[in-house]
Image: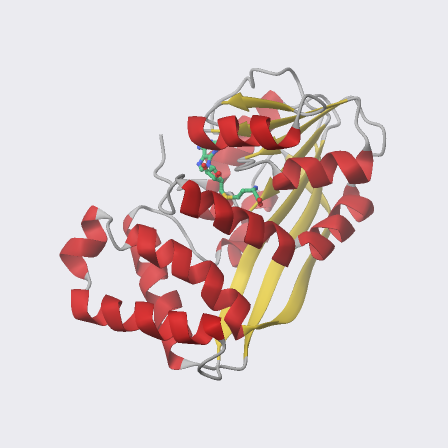
Length: 259
Ligand SMILES: C[S@@+](CC[C@H](N)C(=O)[O-])C[C@H]1O[C@@H](n2cnc3c(N)ncnc32)[C@H](O)[C@@H]1O
């Protein structure tokens, strides 16, 4: 299975909650624009702590909503937090079929960036989905920071992901991947926002503290530089150092499974 670089401990779970808050409004728009209200089974792929699963259920009210994640810890946390109205299963979503059944709707938020072969994954999802199923995708297209520490963070995390065959700004290549897939795109757009740097620094600080222990990161990156970066992100997150905003574009795609 692929490697998820950002961990699944309590710190990672808290970060996913903050991530969910940061992207809730734009995800809600995607669900409303491309989803099928009242559909049968809806699956949230790489659901983490279940925040995107809950949003999917709240916006579209499917008959059944299931979150699938490779991490047993995240699935246990999602079950604890979101109660019996939602289902959660441990599953590597690069593999079809899915344990919960054949979904009519699939949501993928911030997952393809962690998976090495987008084309193969889109093929697996087509195999796992019902005929005529809808796939909604939300992935990072670009991150541009005014502050050099944030810019350096993005450069390092992109290198780390690249080492594992992953792409930080995978959203930029999604249209090409979809064109060669079993999915027909019906809506594809960039959603661009300026996000306050303290919020982004808070999100990245949790990640940095996790991935700096990664074997490749330890071997390749300078420890003193990572210490300095961690301190800079702490100051930015606390509002002690002005850092402006981060220009963030995400690619949102609505696609239907070709029959
Ligand atoms: C950045 S989190 C996104 C969580 C959620 N989709 C959200 O937006 O709030 C990525 C999630 O994908 C999961 N993941 C990574 N690779 C996976 C795989 N092959 N199968 C299932 N889950 C995977 C990770 O465990 C993690 O929970």
